Length: 352
Ligand code: F0G
Image 1 (cartoon, rainbow, N blue to C red):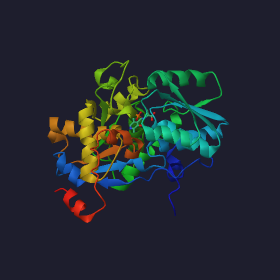
Image 2 (image 1 turned 135 degrees about the vertical axis):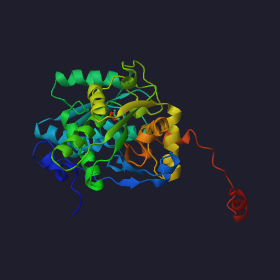
Image 3 (image 1 turned 180 degrees about the vertical axis):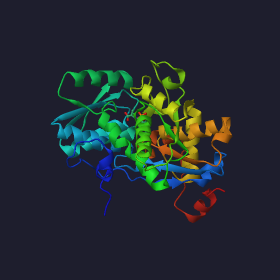
Image 4 (image 1 turned 30 degrees about the horizontal axis):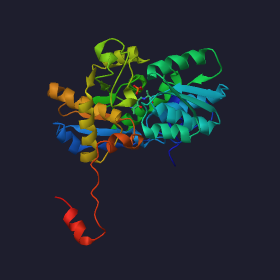
């Protein structure tokens, strides 16, 4: 039987309207063992795995939450949906709204959305509005407008988003037979870390996992309100997906990190780019920069406190595909060597 999407796969555990789901058969993403990366991070005896969420239908983990939010919106009689987004939520909302026959409006921070995400939102037929402000400004606006109109908000403030996103925790436990020792992931608006913790604690409570993971949430240094303890008015990072200064679910993320005996830390853009390059060049896994934050955070935390990570089962969640953001690669790429179409020239050109 083919994979039916996360709602049908986990229906008894998800609080979503009991109707035919709006799905693109999201979820069921691979949990890839990455021993070469473990070695390179100085964790040779760890069972390090990558939950490759970039392989969801629109290229990010957002599809897990969007199937639930759009299914519920349709069941509740909505005609249109809206979100603010650093890009992935926009593309996902646009795709699922298209499939449900709903109008979709997305607000994006001007000039700060990676090309593949913007192209996706446009391709799926959303109305894209670029605001002269940050993601946080956009979120304030969509909250206000959805309170006073029929348009349904599908940011992760919407509880159904978290219901869907919990499914990633279930998949990890089902595959490992238990929860990992550590789960490392990037944190922006803090919906995903909150959803993972809900999923792991739920699975533990019903006896489907015997343990709980420690959560390592990772923010970019220029956008690290949860590490610094106050909102950031002008967040800045190359990891535009997590360029967020006022996370809507920040409180819950801090509680999840604390309850799990984990932590939230920050990494610099250089550390993010180093991890991003390692993933692609050592394991053949190309992600968008924000997605590498979890790996960068693991690297930093394991350097500070090797004992906590040695010999452990560690899952890093890679939230979005590299194709979302080709610009970050091309801006750093050397100009390709140009040669005449002759064997002799080719032999001379190949290095190493
Ligand atoms: N990784 C990627 C690739 C993202 O797009 C996001 C969030 C995150 C991590 C962080 O997840 O917000 O649940 O803590 N992107 C949102 C968006 C904000 O609009 O696409 P979070």
